[in-house]
Length: 216
Ligand code: DX5
Ligand code: ZN
Image (cartoon, rainbow, N blue to C red; front, side):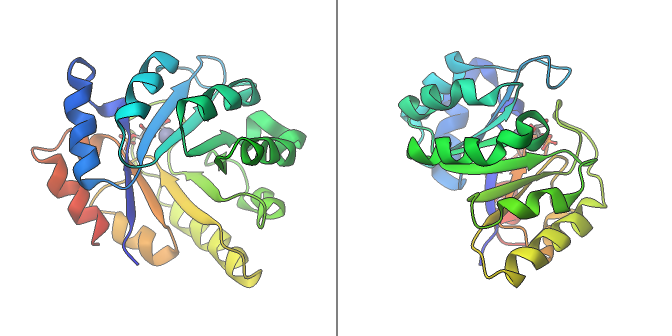
């Protein structure tokens, strides 16, 4: 099974976004859109002005990563825009996590639960069989261009083992500092989808990096 690559628009060229989206349409698997509110994380990225522009021209699934407090406020609006995958943080949802997954499903989208590197992986276990995917952060959410935290590979293995043990179907997505040097180890650990921001967009040829990551 090839690794799916979800380039993060956070590192794209915002003055020429259409060009970058067209490039992703031609070779990537998902388009990752990072929404940050300056409260859940110490940074602000973009919101619907960008998502509404990208979603209609995306020919591959859009994957919105909500790094916000009260993620549920935006589910309906994302569904209307045609977003396919939505993830929110367990740290933001707490005991409402199961309810939020149901809400995303009722709107016809795939639901993902995300965790930062300091949240024990076992906290995701009760959503196995319910969530469509899990987003394991391999840097602390908030900024592109950070260094990959190597222990993330063990965290993926722990999650993968439990998904397999239960015979469940959930995908594992990893986000932060992913590039050619760690994608192979991630795939071997059981990752299905890698998010890649700077390693793709800062490269001379983003297309070739995407192809390399797909085929590690
Ligand atoms: C970080 C974001 C990531 C970020 C990844 O909070 O969730 O999606 O764009 O960027 P790189 O690949 O540069 O770490
Ligand atoms: Zn992200």
